[in-house]
Length: 173
Ligand SMILES: Cc1ncc(COP(=O)(O)O)c(C=O)c1O
Image 1 (cartoon, rainbow, N blue to C red):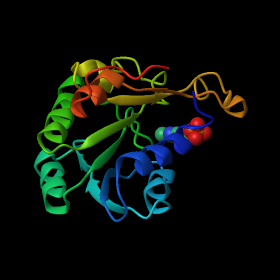
Image 2 (image 1 turned 180 degrees about the vertical axis):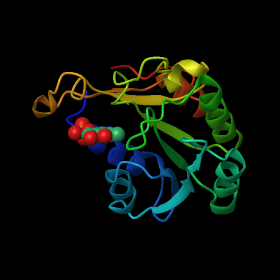
Image 3 (image 1 turned 180 degrees about the horizontal axis):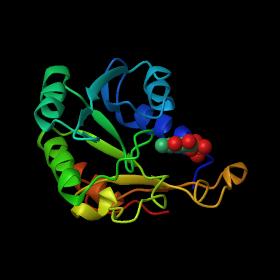
């Protein structure tokens, strides 16, 4: 548990990247994403979303090129995406995760708006797209208007890190 999703994003940036590393976000996006990178002395890389046929899309060639060009270490996903209201599909999330894995980019998925979906769409959690895909932030605060209770959850696939760090045993609590 954490007192805030934004605070958790800041902690994740600090924990998993080094000073001056590049962290990527898709623009336009919820404005504290910028701050979570900058207050830690990391650099922002933008992957601009493309407005096409009345909806936003990710240009996955640009997404991958930005990662390569800047040696990006972390990507903060907004799923569903605030402010454009995009509900990422399983296929899109798979592409995001696959590209990030190819370049060893850690993905943190902010899923705080998961319960606000227009009919005809379905929220797919990033961590459920593939067993090897990473961590998500959720909270009841948007759904039930409970921001003052400060009760978000960070769901971390610990085994993934144990495997990546080549640790043989899970740490004891
Ligand atoms: C995408 C997104 N993440 C996080 C938050 C805020 O989360 P918290 O108050 O837990 O930091 C908001 C609030 O609008 C949001 O839109």
